[in-house]
Length: 467
Image (cartoon, rainbow, N blue to C red; front, side, top):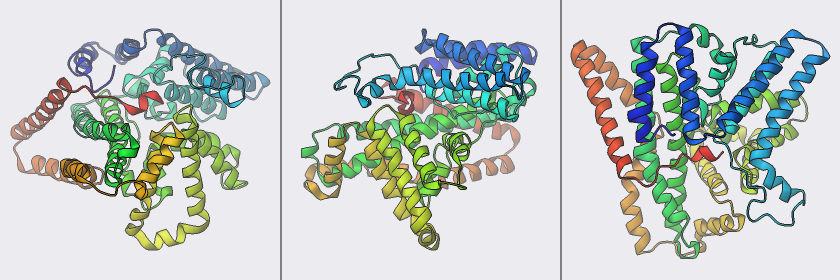
């Protein structure tokens, strides 16, 4: 089940809200949320919900062993077991065919050899459960003695499928002692609807255009068509993933959970370094705290550490060489900025965004094309390898200029600023009843637009589901 589906919007979510509000007490509400989350996951993954519960059980038991034998060999063994089992499950389901080819155990992998189905969200919940056990071992969090509460942390449906990656330390107190007042519910609903609009009204349309161009015969593409295609994909992946994060954060807020931000307008970044402080923030901080710093961070072998982190970042996104190269591409750019370009970019100030954004867009070429030869051909078209401009390109550009203009504005803080001003004006300048009416009218209109788009749409993917 996905958030941008009619079954979620009109059946699952309303029923979950009604039951959640009807039951008394925090314990009962936690049970409702936990069971609802398992139903949410099982809706699309009826078999792999068992794997989710098993993964949670592994880390729950190992964390209890660590807590009971702190400082002893049993604690180290439990930590090792947690890491090995979690990474073993991830490698088995996500990377087994890839590694069979890499290590030459099969002659050539053009189609899956083992062919295991990738459980949705395994890359996200594996990191969550494993980080909990590591934090218990480090003494950063107290052990959770209630398995149902721990399973709620792992399976909570707002962030289960595609993040953000939520650490136990962020919501430990909220599991047992949160409150959700009307202001939280209103703020959560607004954030959810903002994300839904990003996904349905922007990402889906940009994605449909991108797919039509990027899956076409590259030999027939003009330079302008290629740039429109990769720009549309760049905006699709941003509004798709940041929209999902907005919906996740909004749903969490509705039920009293406060998740950290996952995106902060990354396309206005003035360096690649700043871009990765704004894009998929929860993944970046995970690799920083659990890989980069333990390897030595900035203290020793910094270049090696950065390359390892970005190799793993690329591999995390998919079992294919294009993702590995995509990660190393950004690792190389970060090293270049660290050792050569940092001072120059700081002097350019906002002008440096003209350097950052094109490099990010080129990175998305590697991300999109799993066939590296096709990626190289496409780069050639981008830089004049084909016809620069033709009648078809002119029609495409004219038809998509409004969409691209909307994408540019919506990817900057301007949209949030305008919405904030409108809310402040409504709150200060309108009577309470009129303000409430305006709030409901806005959300109802946005929901109606999204519903109309979904009813007639055949294109509604969430890109990060496959990672």
